[in-house]
Image: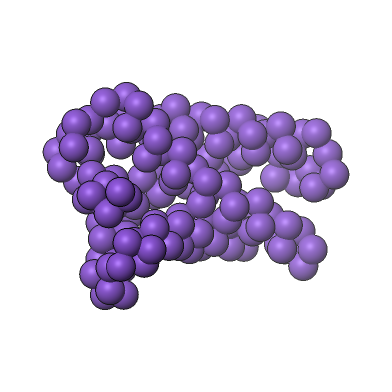
Length: 146
């Protein structure tokens, strides 16, 4: 698999989709339960990994890959990308004054979340390009996409 910017962006968007679902769901659940910032971030990270891996597993299962192989491939393909993305997007949310304490109905919260995911995409794409160029990351599961 050739490590082009387009392939890296595609892999990063795939990862970003799972992370965004996890982040939003985590924040909504944590807010509804009245949790503080720490537990909210932990839940969002756990759900981001869950949904990131789930999206990859779905594609692998569709391709007929068995459960054990699919799980190993998903872990190999997505772990570093999701980890970097989560560090960056949660870091951005934490450093924007008031973003973590803003309610779900505020422009500050949603604007900060959108910015944090954009920054995470921009930071993670070159990392994914490098990983794919080494035959790792998304390159590991690419053969199963077609």
